[in-house]
Every structure is written in C-alpha cells, then in structure tokens.
Length: 461
Image: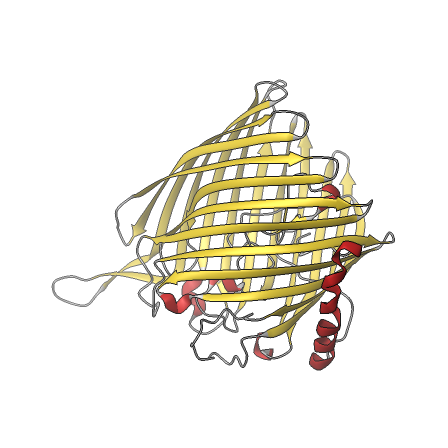
C-alpha cells in the first residue's frame, strides 16, 4: 500500500520537538478532527513518497526524488503490492510550509489561494488483504483519507483508491495481474500553477518472469495508464499511456549481476487536438497529440564486500512525436551509484541522467540530470536519523502545448532534508522531518523556495 510513512524522533532529535506545539495549534485553528491517518499516494505498493536509502538501519527514509514535498514521485512507474493476511493502518501527518503553494517572489496570489504559507493535515486509513489460493495469491488494497489546509481551504480534498489483483505462480514462472484506481488532488509538481484540480488515475498491469536455469531471468510486463484532470481547462493534461517492457538478468557470479532492459511507450494526450493547415480552406483534424518512446539500457551491480556495493547503467532513449510529425529526439542515459551499509551507519551517492515522456504541456519529453547523497545512522536499538541532499536539472524538449500561457524551458532544483524516527511500542511510529527546496527556472516566473517541517504518526493493527 502506498503511503507517506515517515519514521522519526528520539532523544537526538529533541530540538525538533519545538515544532509540535506549532503544528498542534494550527490543527486546532483548522478544526481538523477524525481518525488518525496519513498521506497516501497511488494504491498498492511500498511507500512511493520517501524512497528508502539503501541499507539505512531500521529503515530510515529519505526522499531524493520528491519535488517540494509532494508525497509521491509524480511521474513514477506502476507500483504493486501483494500481501498475505489482513492489515489495517491509520496515520496522521501535520506539515507546515513557508511557501506550500510554490509561488515565486513578487507573484500575486490567484486561483482562489489566500496565503503562501500554510499548514496541511493528512489523515488516512489503509486496509490490505491477501488470500492464498493454492500457489496463487488474491489481494485487495484500499485507502481513504483527506487533505486539510488551514488557510488555502480551496485545496481541501478527499483522497481514496483501491487496487486488486492476482499474484500468480506456475511452475518456475511468477507474475501478477493488477488493476488500480485513485482520486486525489493533483500533485503540485505536475503543474506550473497550484490550483484546485482533482485527478483520477487508473492502471492495468500484467507481468511475468520465468527463470532459465540458476542464472538467467527474463521478464515481460505491459501496463495501461489513464490520467484524467477534473479542473476546468486542465483536461489538456489528460493522457492515455501504454508501456511494454522486457528485461533479461544474468548472475555472472554471486557478486556480479548483469542486466538488459528494453521498453516501448505510447503516450496520447487525449484532449490535445492536432490540425493540418492547408493553403486554402479550413484546418483539417489529424488526431490527438501522440508520442512514441523507445528505451534500451544495460546495467550491472557488483558487491565489493558485504557492506559496499556499486551499480551502473548506460542506454539510449529515442522519442518521436507522431502527431504532429516532428524530428526524432535521441538522448544517452546513464546511472551510477555506490552504497555502504554498516552496523549503524549507511550512506549512498548516486548520479543519473534520465529521459521520460512529459505528462504536462511544456514539452514532449523531460531530460533530467540528477545527483543525490544520503546518510543514515541508527542511534540505539530503535531510533533512526537520516539526512540528505538532491539536485535536479531538467530540460523540456520537443513541441509544447500551444494552450500553455508560458512555457518552461529548463529548471534546476535542490532539496535538503533531515529527520528522525522511532517506534513507540509495537503499534506506533512517530517521526519528524525538515526540508528546504529551491528551484530556479527559465522563465524565472516559476522560481520558488520553501522550507517545510512535519510531524507524523503511524499505527498498524
């Protein structure tokens, strides 16, 4: 089940506790009541908000790929979850942001928003159920929650979703078939402007893998994804996406793993019409804006020892708009990383260049260069401390949506964060996190910075 579960607090984090009265006071101001709960991203899978640092003792969390504290990576892939038994969880996250709506300096408030700074409260209830059927597993997951804003109440929204599927096993082959649906406020990272925009997402996924011998592991997956925006004028961001992915893994030695991956993606902006302009007569409708996207990569992972691992990949991405016809865009992609996992200390350093279809209207594809560094430390038996930094440089390539009033050409952003988590008894996890995000864009009207702080509580039954 997706959700933003931040595990935090402890004696070493006592200075952060000064935030508690502030956030609790704001909760009273907003008159928020109801069950304890928390943020939930797309249903079905591990937390898609803060990404786990490789080897952080006790499972410390960081979020190198989040924008300005969205609770999930907005352009991430399909996440799936299958779990035996029955589990109920509730959570509550209180968050303050000095510029929660990401407005640039000197830019006037609009779209019904009344304040740059705000408090946001996120209660949620999550349910997971899995029933074995012989070697198969039938699973159902659900979530129900709401976002409350103390000042910008126009952004108050329910968030709910469900997914169900079958994790199958046949001889040596395994895989799953799954469908999911969510409805929530659109993540801010997807839009140039923060507005009241309920967004629906539905996904169908089919996957399978059949090992050959002890070393070779081919796999294949296909997914269909639909995004629909409900705010007036935002239907230009609606997309229908099909993805086909094939991979081949090979264990050279217990320490060295090699892999080959290839994928095809077709993205249709279902409400962005393309017309031909003949020399005479009216425009001729050709269809909807359509993008074909091909990717191929090779990768390797090597364990230098029980605590130190390195990994890397290199590949090629080719994208081409079918409608309107355009030039082919070819980019080299890569990733490189090193991670250390010790008895108490863990650390990772990563660099990558990625290309992906753009769900928004600024371009056909995003080309992103990223750097991130993460550090975790286990204090005592149950207290996890973590800190990190991420840098992202993004270029927008290909044709732009003519309906966009002002097109972003590029942007650079940095995010710094620090936090702590601890378990209280067997049921509860309490956490705190502070972060600062700074983005510089071309054009500069989309520049912003924000400092955020949050306290979270999670309970599992």
